[in-house]
Length: 188
Image 1 (cartoon, rainbow, N blue to C red):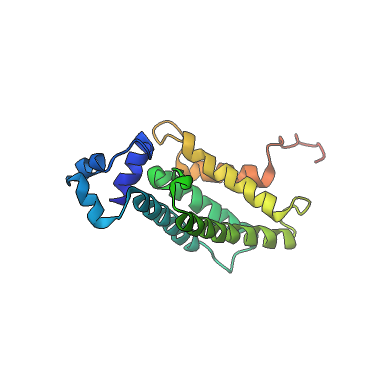
Image 2: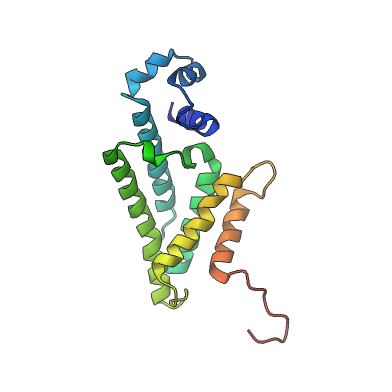
């Protein structure tokens, strides 16, 4: 039900989507939705919770303490991109402002905790000298999330590169920037 609701909200917008339409998609009467959820806003909150829980679980699976921090960060970023592009409806932004303040606070707390995973790896990579330290770990984390998350708005699995290839390209851009490699014999 949550995935269908997320798809409907992406297609029509949260405000324009009705529980009747969702019920039709699920083969239920529109009012049956209220058997499972007290309101359309609770349904939206549950979509956000599912999204945050899913992505956190998927990224946690690849965190290997035996790897150097930069490689842990690479695996985490890769998993993040592949996860969001595999189910774009679930992970696409809807309208967080539609949530009741306590639900919005919960989602923002979950987001901060998730971002902290990346921030910790970036700081560790800065400390071991594999990432630059003249830019704050927080700014690097925000830059990485910007690269990873905006993709969801334009990515088309039928036209664009595979999610795995995009994830690798984004991390390469994050690590190396967009500066051209020096020609043979030239100094860096």
